[in-house]
Image 1: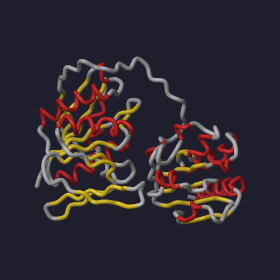
Image 2: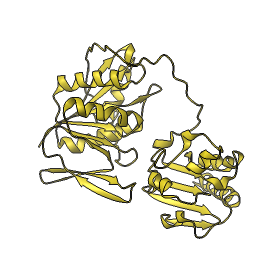
Image 3: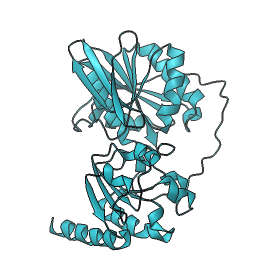
Image 4: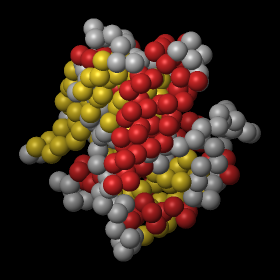
Length: 325
């Protein structure tokens, strides 16, 4: 059954986030040969429409307004609801990011729709589109189908492969004028902590440190390894509580959920709250001096040893591999 499916292209610092392309890929599966319509909300975002089309969208609807320059649930809900009203889609896909987690319940309520959140897999079986999502902090998975109404889902980053980019692909780009009004929140300025390198939530490689790093300086070997591998640095709640690093790096039940191709846990014991944020990583390597540490129960590879000896060794070996590649 061919369907029209809308996809919200999420923009950060003037660039489309990778999860936007993963959402387009998910929408293609849901559309089953139908039309995938990208949606861009913001100020001066029209120039990103071509990139969304090259990554699989059939056409793009752009809503530009200075009130959408910074994300607010009020403003973005008004903009996206206007596009839904104009396009009359059968499906809607948004990334399960901080923006998506805030916006999607509001939209579902306004649309009187169900919502399948944090989807990690989509498959078509007969007449059913089956969504897979983790439950119980990732200890189990459930499968869901939508039996009636709008098919509305948010997808977890790094779980659904984006389509291959086709720079020759073209599509229609249209603008929709929306009167954004009655905003309860007005953002005048955004102050971010300075961060370098890859976005933690979308990184393909994550090097994470726990209390075993012992200090703020203890993260330096991890940062060097992350730089060599083109990855990001994360942390356990324990390391954040000990003030070794900022809470923006926290991975776990009360932090970020990551699913990289490679996760290297350094000096992390493996509390259940931390495992909830990283146990679905494709390959997990644990480095810990304690052979009984719980992290080894979920690791694909374990190294019993001092992280301050092991991590620099790994860094040097990866450097050699890159030189010889």
